[in-house]
Image (cartoon, rainbow, N blue to C red; front, side, top):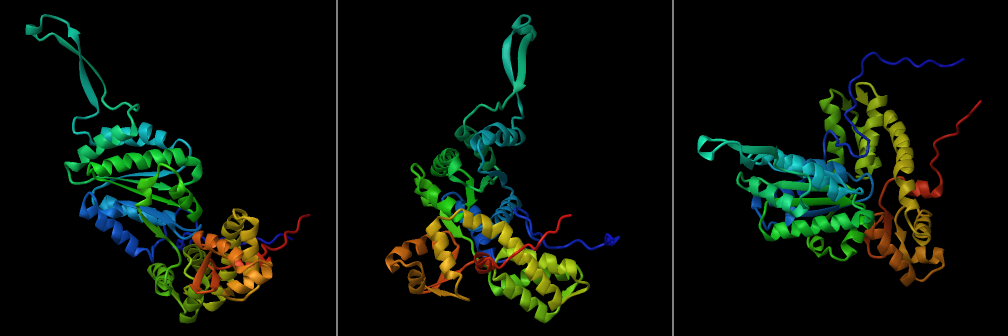
Length: 385
């Protein structure tokens, strides 16, 4: 007999948002980056923070931080162009974003009058003009940004361009944008650019030719947030929703996140969903189990699939330990020299997949990675009739 689950007629909205690309109810642990960018906008042309690179693994909150930085700019009256590094990036900017912004902010309006001839003797006022759009979608990226920043500078504002999910496939467009912004920087124009992506994508961009300007940009790798920040990120949204945590349950949830923002949202979401007025340790234990499976499927699987065979072997050797691993023991397990293993250690550090808490020691950076590598995480068996 089929079990029918009763759906409550009313339920308070869950304050946690474990969906990629969405902003949490409370963004924690990124205050210094936001303040640094705000100061750069206030300091004027030449401030180094007006060119910013954000890197981090999936789920560390790159897109949420981009949203917060855009909000910071808007509060200062700056315009924003928000894009993703997909094919046709420059074309979208020159045929959509910039013509629309120019039409809105050109003090001369969006039409121009062009002389077309005389309908009668000129002294009688018989002069004809054609009217048409002032801003056509054909001009270059540089000319459009130059004109737009010229209008905005008169009002003491500017434009921020944010580009998410940068990838080698769009290198030509990113190179063109970097070159254009460099010229505008040299002309002291009010423009800022922020690019975000996976560590390996950011490194590939910085290694590419013709991209020297971005190598001088501020690079802020994003990793774990502090325990205090994680506690605020879990406690405040629940309190604002009219509920509370048991002290032991909150501590348990904080430790389970290990400062990983996506895990924080998942644990909070599932615990809030399962609990009543007070979230207890039972709800947290179930939430952590569910969140670990979600991270395994949505983060660890695609992350590992992007690695080389030797990098995966390095991680599998680490997964044999219950905690941090000695590099020398990893080399022994892999049957390789420490020099050989060292280059793969560096690669995994650069990709933010492992950390090095002390000399000769490495740790897996994201919660649940060890269990995933061991094959201990399962979505459960599915029975079919």
